Amino acid sequence: MSSPVEERWIRRYRDDDGCETKLVCFPAAGAGASAYRTWSSGLPSDIGVLAVRYPGREDRFGDPFPSRLEALADDIADALRELTRYRLVLFGHSMGASLAHEVALRLQEWGTPPAALCVSGRRPTHALAGRQLISGTDEEVIAHVVGFDASRAEVFADLDLREIVLPAVRADYHLVDDYSGGSRPPLDCPVYGYTGDNDSEVTPEQMHGWAELTRGAFRLLVLPGGHFYLRAEEATLLADLNHVLDDIKSRAKTVS
Image (cartoon, rainbow, N blue to C red):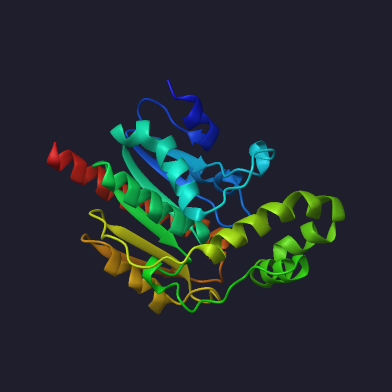
């Protein structure tokens, strides 16, 4: 039986008693849990597929936005506390990568580190200095979003949809700009990096910096595409995640 806090923060796309390994997915800025709605069909049936429900969008539309990314990580970690009896693999894209990393650190501090951290399309925490800030006027925020995700142009062109979508994007952009990152303790779990070869937000070389944030193994997979490469390359990405999850399950059997 899940707790009310867990239910408020976690959407389950697949999760049953046989899912001893659970993939917990963190959306990008402005996005919601539904960004991962198709992933369960591309992963084995014994893998739980969960997505984090950020406040201020989708079925949490009326909930207040968090004030700081670190505060959001605190709340998500608390919501995952009861799930740490399972093998948790955290996957985050863009802003979600920073959040997943912060949550992984909190779980590790409690003595229940995740089985692995998967980060996508985001500079590592200690390499955020000097990045371009993305908050601005509504028009500047929209231009930034559409600049690397042309599919959103139609949404912002509809004034009614814009009024619904833009507040979450603006709030998340403020979280990203205010998050200074910096030095963090190394993780005890492996870290897997993913990025597009034409991502305007991060280079493959910068993604390699995540290797410095773990005592475990690091591996980077570069796929064709821009910042949202994971849409067109979803099948390839999920196939690789399947290998990661298989390895985690195999290591767990060896230990037991």
